[in-house]
Image (tube, rainbow, N blue to C red; front, side, top):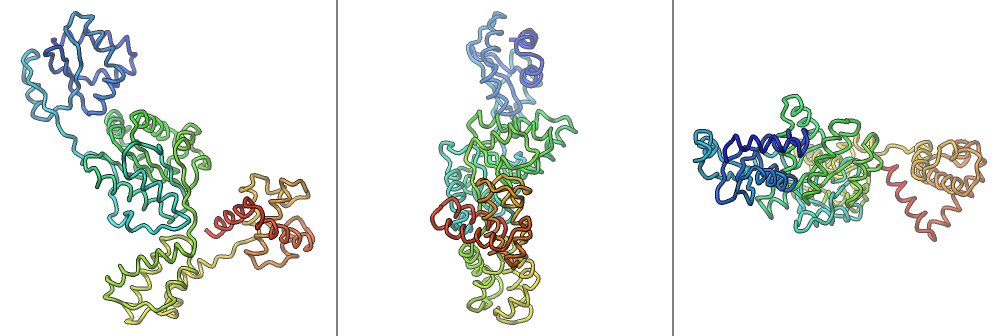
Length: 453
C-alpha cells in the first residue's frame, strides 16, 4: 500500500468517524508497512495504538478492504529512533521491519516518593486500620477490586504516607508497572502547561497510558472547570482499561465544595475510606516507632519514662505535629547536653502545648452538631421541640457541658435563653441514651473527634 492509497482511506475515515475523532486518533497514524496481510502503523505511544485498535480498528480495516487492499489484520507499533530514521529514508514499498521501543519510565509525570513512607513505617491503630487494610489490598496488585480507592481525612493523619506506601509496594512487586503519583496541583499545572504549549495530545496519551494513577489532595481541582473536565475524561479512560486509580482528599467526595457532581459520583463508585483523628494509643505508637530512629541519630540520647506518654496525651492535633515535637525534643536535648525529662519537654514544647490546648467553644459545638445532623443552626438554638431537632440540641448541650468550662446557666443562655434545668435534663438524657443507643454513642464520638481535631 502506498501513501496515496492510505490518503484515500484516511479521507473516507474522516467522514466515517467525524472530524474530532479523526484529528485526535486517525491523523497521527503513520503507515509503515503492508506484508502478508498485516498493515503496520506507527503510533506515538502504546496507549494510542491500543485505543485506535479497540475503537477504530474495524472501521480502518473495512475502508482498506473497500479500496481493494489485501489486509486481514492491523498492527500498531511505537518505533525506536533508529527505525524511524530509516523509515523516513526508505521508500514505501521497501520499508524495513519496525523496531518496538520499550517504554522508559523516566517519561512519567509523577512526583518523587519519600523512602520513609512505606507500610513498614506506618503505625496502625483503630482510627486508620481500615484505610491501611484497603491500601495493602490494592498494593498487592492482582484483579482491580476497589476502583477508585478514595482515602480522606484531615491534615497529618496518614493519607500521603499510605499513597507513597502503595506506590513503593507496587513498583517493588512489579518494576515494569507504570505507576504515577502526583498532587492534584501538579496535575493541574501540567494540564495548563500542555494547553499553553499546544501539547494536549501528548498530555492525554501520557496520563492515559499509565497502569496506576494516584492523585493526592483532589480538593485542589475543585472550581477549576477545565482541569476537572480533563480529570474526568482521564479517570474514565483508565477505568475503561481496568487500570487502578487511587485518590486522596481532605473530606469525603460528596462534601468537597465546587467539585463537579459527575466527578463526585465517579469517586464514590469505588471504596471510600475515612482516616479518623488519632487516638491516644495511636499517637503513643507513632512516638515509640520514631524514638529508635532519633536515638540512633543523636547517639543514644536518653528519654525519661513518662515523656512519650505526656507528649501523646497533650498533643492531639495530628501526626506531623507529633513527630515534629519529638524531633525538637531530641535536637534541643542534644544541643544543651541534657537528658529528655518531663521538665525539659514542658519547657521545650511550650508553644506546641499551648496551641494543642485550644479551648472548644459552645458556638463551635453548635455549628458542628448542626452540620452533622443536617439541621439549621437557627432551629438548633430556637424554640422548636420536634424530635428531629430536640435530640441534636440535647447532644450539643451534652458536648458543651463536657468539652467547655461554661456553667449550665451560661450554656442555657447560648441555647436561646433556656433555663439551666433544661440543660441539665438534656445532658442527663444523653448520658442515659449513649449506653443503650449505639447511634447516639457513635454520633458523640464522631463529633468529639471533629471538635478536637
